[in-house]
Amino acid sequence: MAATFYNLNLESGLKKLDDYLLARSYITGYQASKDDLAVYAALSVAPSLEYVNVARWYNHIDALLKMCGVTEEGAGVNIGSSASAAEEAPSSPPVSDQKAPAAADDDDDVDLFGEETEEEKKAAEERAAAVKASGKKKESGKSSVLLDVKPWDDETDMQKLEETVRSLQMEGLFWGASKLVPVGYGIKKLQIMMTIVDDLVSVDNLIEDHFLVEPANEYIQSCDIVAFNKI
Image 1: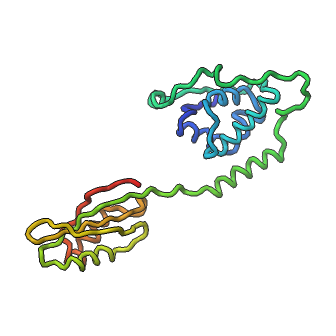
Image 2 (image 1 turned 45 degrees about the vertical axis):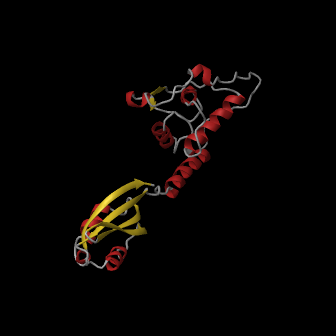
Image 3 (image 1 turned 180 degrees about the horizontal axis):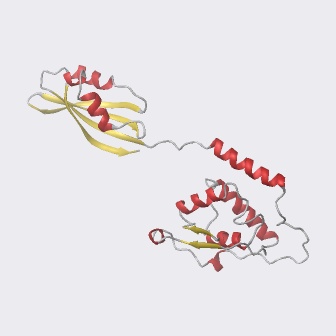
């Protein structure tokens, strides 16, 4: 069955192609074929090294084309874009204007498309296993949060209130600058900044489970999120 690839000039398409080439040297089979040419031509620019498998394959096909071209028929591939992604994809010149396979050199007797040896297949499998083993989870995003922490009344010890707030320590939570802001009738509220690792800290849970229960609620009447910005 023909392989199908969508949105090759978008991050989503490149990621799927990168996964597809993880344990493959070519698009189909064990030799460079017209299937490789079809996918190669669909890429408007050379892929970045972020997509290590696509970059490896692209540079290999590019080198082969410059030397002697590709004549193997291949199994057939389908190239397209989804309706939703088509509007996002930047316009690109017709495939015929992007790249043209170099003419085959009749005097070149070197067989560049010979079938992969057992050693080459084993090396490709080991490379794929190494990539999987060394893969690291992408660092979680961070956010900057500004809190309004209000006391019960004008007799609340605001220094103790701030100490209570800052005493909360947990992985992924970092306290920043703070100040007291008058709200009227002699009452001041504490405004305090914090930075959080999004996957580790839930601000809503932090407020409900720590600031509005004992012993923190001896000083804290309420706590509101004033600003929440991704870093």
